[in-house]
Image (cartoon, rainbow, N blue to C red; front, side):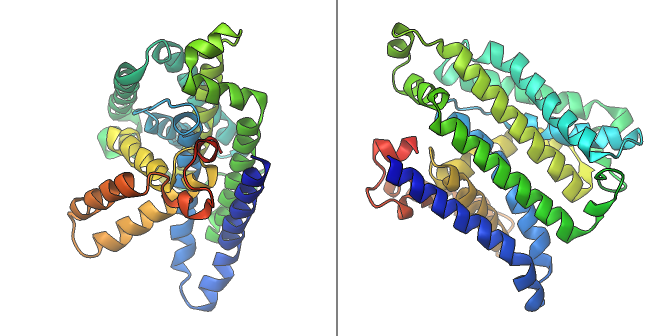
Length: 321
């Protein structure tokens, strides 16, 4: 187990190093646009990481996870609309808003299991989507344009794409560190134990519901951070950020990368968005090609992309990360 965790840390460190070296390398080869693309990839990697925390480790299949992204994005967008640009305020506000929504909806959703949990999270996600669509003062269905990016202590440093890139990279590194600490803690082992046998964990004195709710709120806050970063990156927010299709995309990223592997979530986000970009260059119906590819991965590479880095294969210990 310790060797596995060490390997995961080394692989994650290697991934973060690649991201850190990308801007100067891309600039040297005249491909500066890759910095902007990679920023988007890292933002979705944060969102996938947050989902993997509850899906891969806790078997909580949330089909409304994109709602947290949208809430985080709208928190930044609405703040900007009211001339509040200070990121040290708006980004924590975005995380808090997403966390509160996760607390309210998770308190209800986690009283169900299986397909009922999937459907109720989908319902809450759609409620958030239609609520955002009805906010005519903030663009409604058309979305809301943000005329600038968040400031840092009054300094508009994030207006520079490279500065935003490294800010997103720092956020990704911090989220991975927090998630790894949670997974490796006693709390994380309880979550994994509840996934394996809820009744047994309850019998030995652990409150499964309370542990799952805390994990759900933490995942919601991380996704809210991804939403705040996405709003700054795109300088635009839209109800589409909350759609069930976006939640499905996040689930695909986690499955593609390998559930129960934190670096797998990052790999899944990179692979999914790269495939989307490549396949979309051939046809607008790229999902018709991507669908069978995903089926093949599920059938023949159940550990996802992370399996390639596991010497022992997709064992139970490997899945627990």
